Length: 288
Image (tube, rainbow, N blue to C red; front, side, top):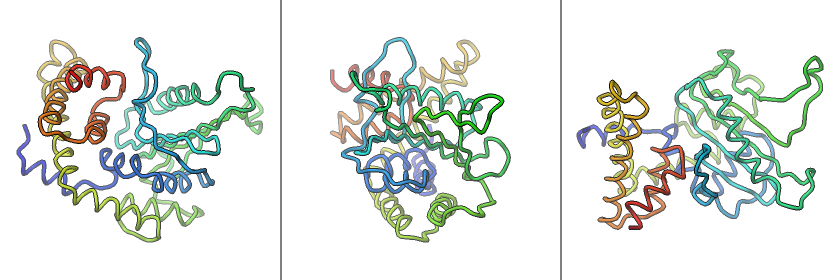
């Protein structure tokens, strides 16, 4: 187990590029999420009645169901998902396809024509250069083979943002300001000032600090357990068992100390990708 002083230092050093803090800042604030989306996609979007948690969607007992970092549906028929990815797991393109499939299931209601399909937009903010070309933005498009000038309109937008890019020539000023803030914490316009204000508010919140430290402890415990068990059961199985045991402790702590459920959910989402599994853990240890 990590000592409290080590955990406190991690909290102190955590920036907006920490997944937990990113989810708190943009996943709980409609205005900041809207501003983030408009700067990433360089288009106006509507207003968000709420930023919906994947927890509210129907479970599936067999097939994989992704857990989104931030997700919103606006009043202009856009369904939007923004993800922060700090580590290259060499599966990003396939992951985007699965995430798009999940959004597409919610893009058309029964009885609607196909032309009424909602637009689905996915952005991945990557702290690495997936293709190694030093381009700040990679827009993924579907074309006709042999006729690449023909673009296939599937009603979806997929964009990979390279936070490590150094050649920012020609980019919109508001996106450059956002990228600069993510990498350095430097505030240079009204939006990054608003993001920084929320970031500092969260960093000054004792409850958030305790949740962050609990999550960091859980992740470290799970990885340690996985290393011990991995020789016999395989890395992933051991890692999953370790995380579940640690998550149980986190849930029990929340119950005993009457912590806020929304904050608990955010913490659990930082550990597990599958919301169905989170619901199972809550049913087993929280709602018992």
